[in-house]
Length: 200
Image (cartoon, rainbow, N blue to C red; front, side):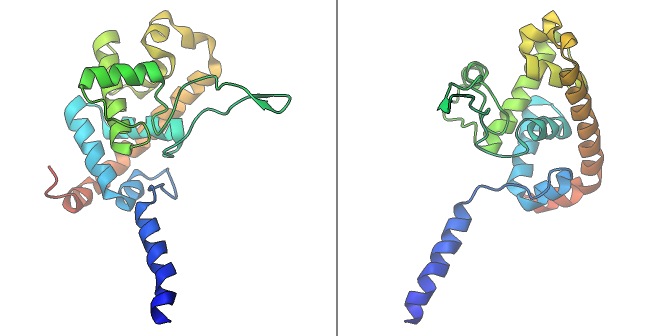
């Protein structure tokens, strides 16, 4: 009987181990990384590879998905009939199919998944690096980087964002969040590095 009682507890423990991490709060990047140190390791790896500040990459992901793995745009309906989604955006970084395909081709890894945090933050690093290379936008300019991220390289070059005051406000929000995350990381990076020691 004791063994029978233990089975549900063992199953619950196993299932919780498979659950996707989702931060309980998203305004403190130190708490986010302490909740899942692998995220910090993956953010550090993306920063090392692409040179994009961790604070900016995390601020973009926060804006796009609030760190939820399987987010998609809402599906509109007509007379209760679901219609196609307006965008193919998916995952932590809300990467659309064409951009994700370009990323896979550029990195030579077709096993990347948009609902995997490590792959998603690496995508953001790659995209911001390409924005710098193609448009000359500094990786330390969150405002312009986010506009290019949202509008695409062609849209940014055409200045499409100038007709979108709401988007400009969102870009300012991403800039403020980046600054907050960067300030937080200055204080907690040493302790996070100790926790992640041996990974690099």
